[in-house]
Structure formats: structure tokens, C-alpha cells
Image (tube, rainbow, N blue to C red; front, top):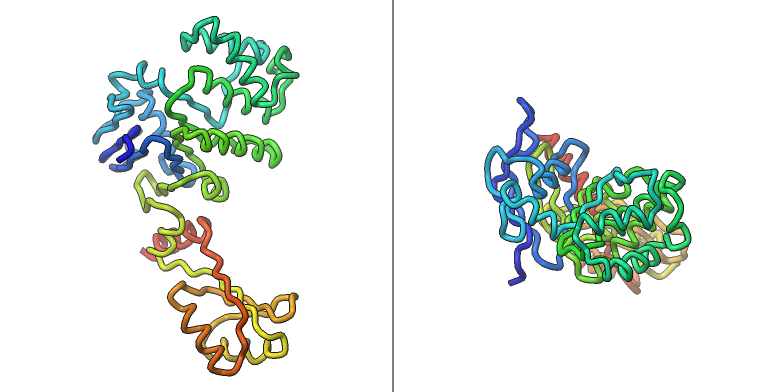
Length: 313
């Protein structure tokens, strides 16, 4: 089994009377990209601060690289790269100077700095702006510099806390692509986000938090199946039989609509187990079926289903 880089068990944290974390448990293994999802206030940032040893737990245990962050925080942080919603850069410095300062703080040898800093500036599209002051940078450029900074010491674990929240769509796309590259390199990443599309594209697995507790954990498709979240089914039939097909589906109690492309229709709210019965019923009524394609539920569908279930409770 892969090594557990992060191991959290029954973790609790309060701020006065407010319960930020109410006993969450999860693990992140080596080379895995895990999404920590939830609304603002769900407990994502508190979790990351506990992993870094910046806060003390009020209950439960947390281990990073087998160490207790509140005791061995310096050693944990030496092996971890962190990027938050706010880059936290000194605007008076140039991009190159920012990286030099942090390389010194991370004890990166001078000889290695001379190759690594230019490489990172090039890799993150900042080579031409290397000697410009950070105060002149756009939000996207600052976040790219923050990502470059967190890789200076070649960390084994990346903790990314809402890294694209304040960015425009183009800059956010660039940052996601950079994160995707780190994923392809096999980096271990914990990505805290409330952006469902971002998590679905970048993560191997997601953990959904609600008011400081874990609602569910797993791959979006596994969660959709477990929750019975319906999907959409595209059906291709003989164009002249489209009306007959729609009538047959309505008789089965299904909601369907024809698409602009001749002979193609979409059936709403279909579970995987209903597909064979649906196709068989169409064929039995004399409708030639040429193809079907089940569109899996998205992470957004799963998220909405969870919140609807929570509301009913």
C-alpha cells in the first residue's frame, strides 16, 4: 500500500464556542491528489493550518510524514509547499528576489539556487518579468510566483488553499494547468477549494466537508453511485421514429426531449441500472436504437444531492 503522507483521525478544533472541526478523519497517500471541498466556513483552511502546526488541535490526532505538526512543525514545513488564496508576497521585491529570499529561508544551497530559480521562473512563465517588482504584477502572475516559490525546496507535499479564488478566468486556468503539471509529476497534493469543476478536473478523490464534519469521501463517480444521483442518457434512434420514442419514454415515466440533431434525444434523471430496461422497452415498441451514451453525474450533481439530503434532515 502507498505510504500515508497525511493521517487525520477524529480531529477537532474550536474557536471560542464555534466548532470549526468536529472530529474529521481522512488520509492522503503518496502521489495522490485529494480535494478538500466545502463552502466558506466548512473547515478547509483550519484543517490546513492544523496540518502545518500553526494551530493546536482540541481533540483527535494529526500526523504529516508520521510527525505531529504542533511538535515537529518546522520539520513538517521543511517538506511541504504551501499556496493560499492570498500569495503573501513582498511587493517591493522583484520576482527573482522573492525566490532568492525564500530559497535562503529553505536552506537551498547557492549552487542549486543558480539553476533552480531561473528554471522555475521559466516554467511558470515569469522569466521576462523576473526583474520587475511584484507590485506591478497582475493577480495571476502573483499566484504563479507563489506556486514557483512553494516548489523551491522540492517539497514532497503541496497544500493549496483556494489558489484560484481571486483570479480572473484566464489566470485561474493558467494556475490549474500548473497544478495539473504537478499532478503529472506525481506530487502529493491536498487542494482545498469550493470550485467543483476545479476539483473534478484535478483530483483523484474528494472529501466534502460541511460545518466542520466530513459528509462523504471518494471519487465523484463512486459517490454518485452510492447516493443514487441520476445521470443523463443520450439515445440515437431512427429519425422518423423520434416521436414514437418520446411517447414510449413518457409512458415509462421518463422525462425526455429531442435534440437538434436528427434522431437524437436526451433522457433526464436516469440511473445506470435503468438503461437496459429503457432500451429494451424502446426496441419492443418497434423503435430502432442505434446507440446510447450515459453521461455520468458531475461533482456538482453529487454536491447538490448531498445538500438536498442535509436540508431534508
